[in-house]
Image 1 (cartoon, rainbow, N blue to C red):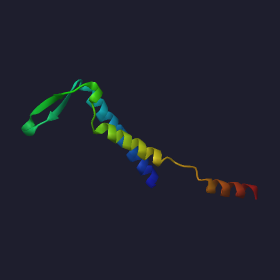
Image 2: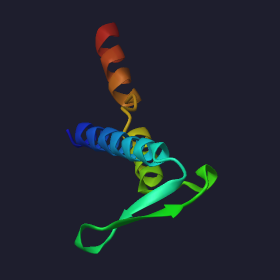
Image 3: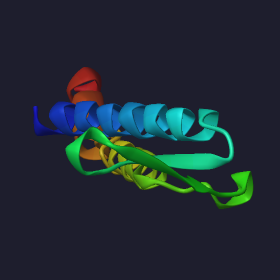
Length: 86
C-alpha cells in the first residue's frame, strides 16, 4: 500500500511541477514577484534562463515514480510456477 501512495505522491509532484513550469514559461520574458502589501514587481529575464521550483518538483516526482514502479517479484513467480507443475 505504501508503494501506491508513493506513486500517487510522485504523480502529484510531477503534475504540480509541470503546471508551475507551464505558468512560469507563459509569463514571457519576466518573472512577476509578489511584494509587501499586495504590490508586485517584475524581473526581466530571457526565456533560456527561466527556472523555478517547478523543474525540481517535476524531476523529484519522476524519480519517486521510477523508484516505486512495481517490480516483478521473481520469487513469487517461481513459487506459483512450482505449484502449477506439482
